[in-house]
Length: 510
Image 1 (cartoon, rainbow, N blue to C red):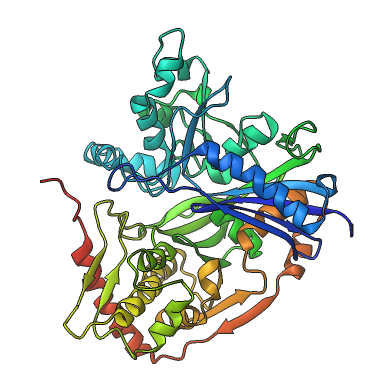
Image 2: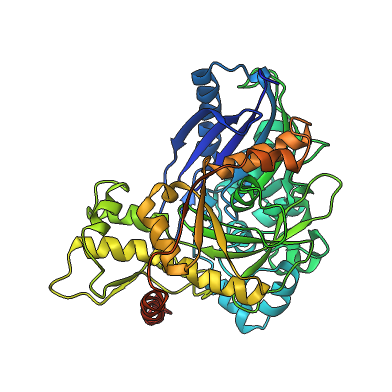
């Protein structure tokens, strides 16, 4: 096994990464490329699926070349992806009919409110485990079919998009399905990504006819759903294609489920939080699909070949790392690494609270019309206070979810495994431990999203034999313990609630 590896394509919100792992779960190749963020209107976010596919090919080739690894040394490829982001494409040409609508996109908020006013949100939540929100793929697919123009011009039969979709000429999927299609020619998604579409019944584990009808999505459009780690394989890369080798594509997980898997949270009660563009706190609930009474989502955690589905509770926080990027965009910082130094340079925020609701608020508030808000500013406020308040907002949003998680599950959080780019910031990890009043555990390999998809693919082809092998690979880099007095943390958190209240229901048309 010393000369074979498993590759992971990690297609994220801001860029695409390719990583190669050895049997010990260590990184032996790493390449990354960003893609354009397209903002056609306020609250709208798009990506070019063709650019994403081209970047995927580039990073795979570059990563292998830099590490001196041949494609035929890959035992398998796994995929992990930004979830909910939706692509519709022509089955014959493979061309997208419109840019991908990104998970952050809020253009379908009016449609969501129609469903809520009609009382449809309750039955939709019961079947899907999801809040009715513009976040998910159902209303995005519906919008594309109603509004995308380019394919109407290409259609020689003069049919509109819905006619073509019903005829099986159009396909839809989240980014994993788009990549699997381009890699193998097969239209396949995994159970975790299917569970994020708001078209899938997580109890029956199948596409739901009533949901498909509600959103006008023909069943002919949706991909085949497979286990996250699939011994039957999703397919193989084309030996005459960009890789020049026939590599099994054997596993896929939505990025947050991939991080849960990479953190080896295989047992009920295990929890992790990933700090990326947004933050996503997941707790494994085993084979029970636990219903949330506190604004969390019930979602599929993963499924191994021939085994029961594992479920999770999830708290989805839309903006955390993106708030740091905003500080850079408005020239308050030069780079993300500066935030710790600036935040440490002041003892507190001087009463400033930042609510980074740039694309609405996710769990547990679920307000698509909330917007970014800063309160408590005085003439004495400096950029250091704003930077510190932004870091604190990440910690407060995580506590919102942690408290909801404990209330729903009845399990007290004693330690939280963390990963993602922001956890390299020791100040943030320490602050997070203080605000939640629990241990924060950072692993040695913090790219756990890519690692999780590699594990899923590797298990499918026998590169790793068991979950115990994967547990043995997981190593702690550092544990952060609370240093702040609990009463002080509670007092700071209480004022956060007041700040959130002021951000709600802001984005209303005159």
